[in-house]
Length: 126
Image 1 (tube, rainbow, N blue to C red):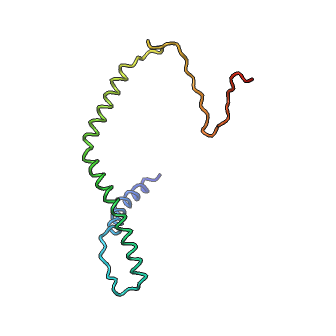
Image 2 (cartoon, one colour):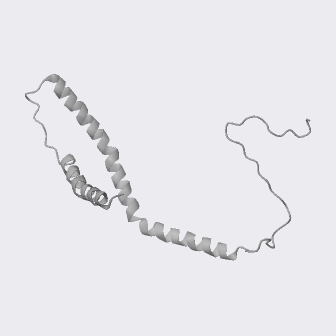
Image 3 (cartoon, rainbow, N blue to C red):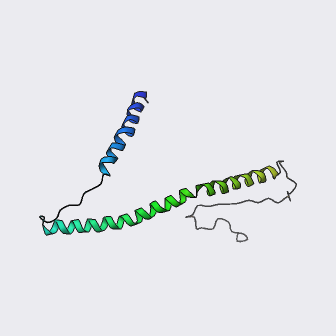
């Protein structure tokens, strides 16, 4: 890929993207509906109800995200503890080809696809 295309892509994403967001997400002013017809007022009322209904879960998600970000320190400490315990356990695991706990059993698994319902093995029937 040509490096000049990368530069153009970076320019577009870093300048025009935020500018377009600023245009799309700017605050809207209340509309004066005194001189418009009944159909337009009904549509405006329906869209207002939709926007209020959409704002409730949107604000709820924002509040949940804010609370989770505040608790990120606790989560990182717990995660570091889990990684530490896993490292200790892996260091204690025997590394030889035949560990001391080997009892001489052979375990074999046979898997079929989810849609395969026919029995493949019939013991004692043939």
